[in-house]
Length: 85
Image (cartoon, rainbow, N blue to C red; front, side, top):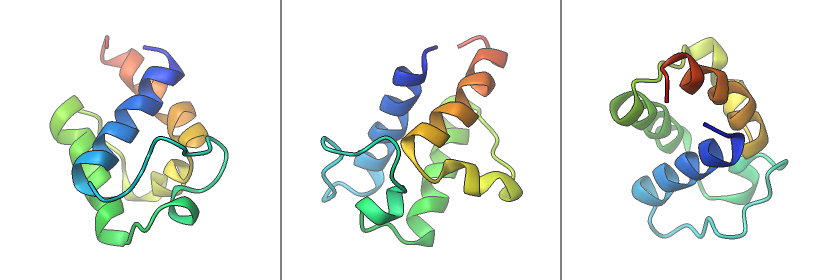
């Protein structure tokens, strides 16, 4: 799985949990919370959906690594690769 595919997965999850947010113009290197109206519960929902939909566990101490699309891709791509996705 490529980093671009991982970014799309994150966008798709955001579209599910926050359907009023427009993810089409997200900048890859800017914090998601600075671009979208996401609160801490929304962020937890993203983490839970990663686990539910893809079996990807994100420990709480790693949450800061999911700040932007770029950092999500850098953190999650090896996890998807380890799952054989």
